[in-house]
Structures are given as structure tokens and as C-alpha cells.
Image 1 (cartoon, rainbow, N blue to C red):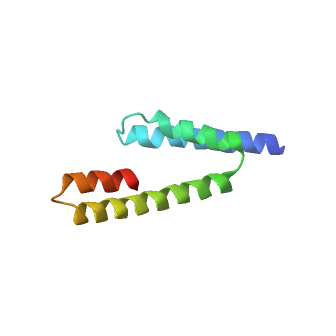
Image 2: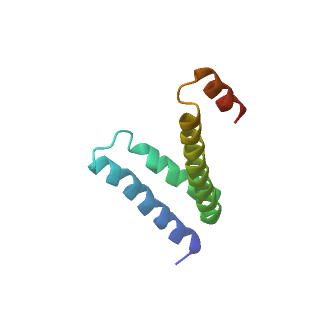
Image 3: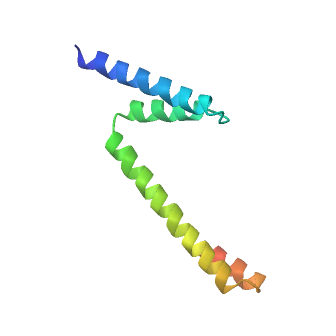
Length: 88
């Protein structure tokens, strides 16, 4: 079987599953998962997409820790909190 046909079958199956699973679970906007599959398939680099996703999750966790730290430090002083958030 041709490589292009194999790729087309994989993308078609991925699109179908990415749309049907959230739709069956009743999630709103189930089509966004299918859009993500199309974007990843069009770039052709799953490794880069996975690396970028990992960095985004790590950045989100770091941001959450910094945010909680700032709230803990300046819980009673709005001005210092706003200044620290604007600097960070």
C-alpha cells in the first residue's frame, strides 16, 4: 500500500475519533479536537507538536505556582499584588 494512502487512512481515522469521542461525551465544541488533528497532520511533525504541548503544560504549571505564590505573598495588599503581577 502506498505511503500516501496509509497517511490518509490514519488521518481520516484520527479525525473521526477526535470528533466522535467528545461528541459522544456531550462536550461542547467537539469539532475543536478534529481541528487540532488537522493542524497536527498538516505540519507533518508529531514530535514537534508533542514537544510544544509538553512545554505549554510545563509553562502553565510554572505560571500557576508563581500566581499562587504572589497571591500568598500579597493577599492583603492589592497595590503590591498588582505591581508584582505586572512585573512578572
